[in-house]
Image (tube, rainbow, N blue to C red; front, side, top):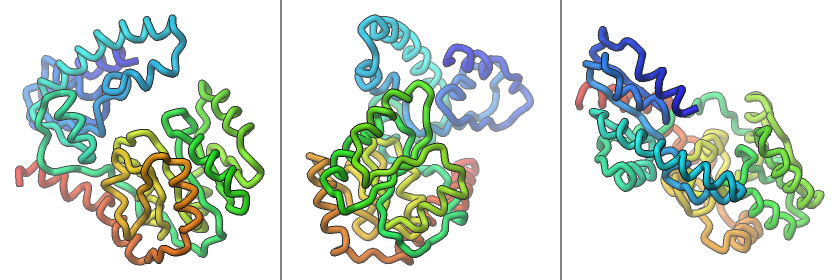
Length: 296
């Protein structure tokens, strides 16, 4: 996929443009386009995990596939680094991404951070129906086992796991569902309207992803007037404050159980939650992008 996508971006005719803005893992290959004469700004959420966190990917593969992956990743990563090296200005979408870009690419990003724009206006705050919920793709990197193990030990608390089903992760989903007690419900492939409704009536949102690049879920929760309990890793440390949620430390299962048991002792303000979500709105994204373009 990388090879085909990179070829497309290398061949686009860009000779008539004064400014080119690219965004995404493969769009960076615009920098290697021979027709590019314009100023090139690239927006990135993070170096591709398959390169930056190879061990995490390899651990999901069998021995034979590991060898193939390692060989492919070696050459693909070299092309990726070369494409990034040629870019005029790199804009990151979180401070976590800034750290990764500086470490992996040895490149200094623009000082302005363009947090991913969130449609905060579409989320509504409703009366809590007492359930906790999590939202994520149903894949191992999201560490959903932490949630299952914790709520298996909390039979009086209800957890709704909302996730998109990936064809190549069906066995993983079946394993999760088989290990979950009756107080845990799985809801897959919901539409936007259903998701907004689930957020609005939740008591709290939970996130356990491994080193999340940024994480839109805590922002969507805030826009819904709901706090978030998340592992103290990655982008969650940028969006969640002590007024909008709880960051838990390892061992995560024990810490999550404690956070849920003591949740009612916290007094989160719906107004403060919704106010903080505005920092990650489309309006702020556009305003900061214009600053980058104008050189302010």
